[in-house]
Image (cartoon, rainbow, N blue to C red):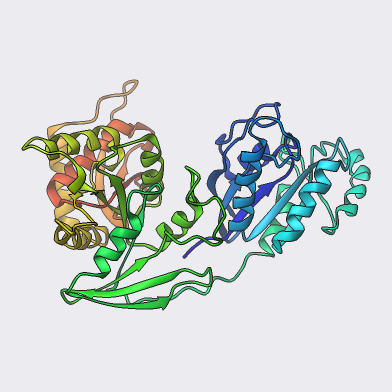
Length: 436
């Protein structure tokens, strides 16, 4: 299920990053008392009561000509266009400014639900000063304090009232849903067309979600698939594909609806930092992953080239050590036949369950061969392991004290489980619980 999207918008230095960090519960955005510090959109997930949502922190919208302000304005306008609900943040200590009024004009044109929040209202006496903000035309202002965490519940209550009901297309359980993500110009659209153009593929376009995506249904060697589109742009002439950051939220929405995510790399250009950021979204979402190196036809090769490129990928994408790698050319369709079997493998392992008795034999043997090191005189004891979920596979290890389960030992158990059962193409999760 794709999550609603919330954008925090306002002129510089009103506390957007502080509010963002409060909502997501982490210090993700840079917080510094200098206008223009947050230059790019920052994305994360939040939750409130029964709602999960994506949230964007934007650089401040300003009307001057200081460095970066035009780029910041473009970034904020993209966020506004992608958002379902907008939090318009203003500074309660400074009153309504001309810049606030200019931001309000931009928001009027968006035709999106706008919730007006007045930040830096740090004590009850200051509440009497917020009513001037009615003049901005967005209804009752909600007082909040990012620095003290006050008023955020009231703010999120109001935001949640505007969340849309997302009418998503339901597919049969045996349909494999996959999407292609990657930075601009790595060949996502060409690869999609190459897959759909295979002779053994039967294709039809079907409505995907109310967010104007078109899913492509296909049948390949008797298996039903759906390709979830990430490449489309909402408005031509906007800066989606011309900016390095493109529309990350479009990829996030596709990832959330996918069983398998194809992380597409440019074999000719090689790996850049943005590739890792984009791949991280799929890993964090717990989706099965296949790494696809496109444009392999344009690479000068010898017998070592593919192996060296694969080693380079493993060094840069250590968090995707489980993901198979496919080298192909969407342009010439060389090696395109190797892709669908890897999608099948990743999907199968993503939904795989293992028998409890065999699982415990593997874990017991691993612990016997390599007991956990003692910590302050106490040693971890592993009693029992069970699988509690699929997509991705998740395991609970019952122990004497979860605090003794060090990250490195958890990784050791994960490696042993992978050695025994494979799970190629999917992340797996391991949780330590105290035996009751």
